[in-house]
Length: 205
Length: 240
Image 1 (cartoon, helix red, strand yellow):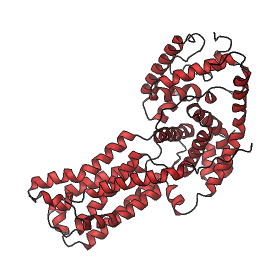
Image 2 (cartoon, rainbow over the protein chains, first blue to last red):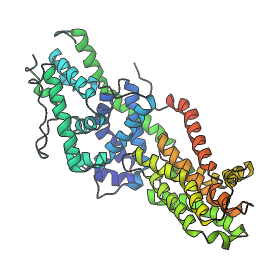
Image 3 (spheres, each protein chain N blue to C red):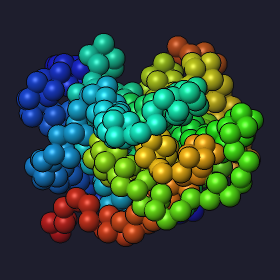
Image 4 (cartoon, rainbow over the protein chains, first blue to last red):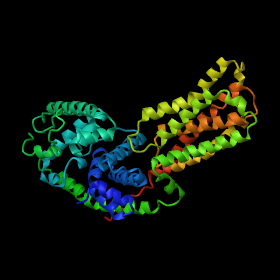
């Protein structure tokens, strides 16, 4: 399978099928990411389309020595922030971005855990929330997140550490603290736990 | 919170997620339709590499200034104050670079700070010129409508170029403030060579209102176009 960067090089060279492949590869993840924060599904789709439109317009700026994925998420984050400024409200976490298809079908326990997690995410500062979403749900490494948010690696780890600690605290207050497995930072190379709800199965009170 | 076994909730959730696959293909179709429309001068200009866009924007600004300098009768007089001119030109260069940057996360505070610097630059210049003792008349700061109209005309080519080069359909407010401030300073620099006034305070700072005018103009433009854009994007209608 060709890498993102190879596909992007092909697209810059004029291969539109490569762009389609990039879209099919990354749009579902970006859509999930957008749906997590936007209740209106059509707005989420609109932002994903804009994200790839921006990528198309900036294609000649692509540097083959740099990874594509952080750039894509930078564009997405810019669009998301601008969207919330325009509509003058804070992101609201929806379950669509947290629940996987098979998870949705599995039961109300997961639904409850997802609701609690969504509420916890809404309560933490935006900078921490963005880092946690990129790390936990979008499965970006800390190096990639540092590229996306334009901060140093250590600053990103600090935000993640504080955010996860806060979530742990909130979930403990909701008596769900033992049911949701939250990644432990500061170990930067610790295996990520992208699908929190996989750990909740059978443990939610 | 739902109760365990809440079938209605589970069904709704399952349906919501199962439509995701359909959503992506619809989105791709909509995006490809939009990409088909990406043709013409604007599409070509804003898809240039950032370095090229930077050179194009500065090229337009330099062309306007060069034209005015060529027509000016008092080049030697004005050039005596070259540090003042160079300071403003540097602010313009850094502002354009920031304005056209697209790879990084938008830093609103930085955009706003640069815009503010450019807006107050003419007033800062007035303090420098005042110290040099070239003018004692505060009334020289008042800009006439003639100056303003000429300034708008001189800076309009840069305004059009920056609009064409911007890759975003919905630029951030701070980005528009910076854009307006850059255009204002370039208009101000052009008027220095053209304005019939011989008062240095007026020449260097009397046209500062131009930047404010452009900033307000862009913000008004953003507000007026916002409503149009909010409902015309490219989500294809759902088949169900």
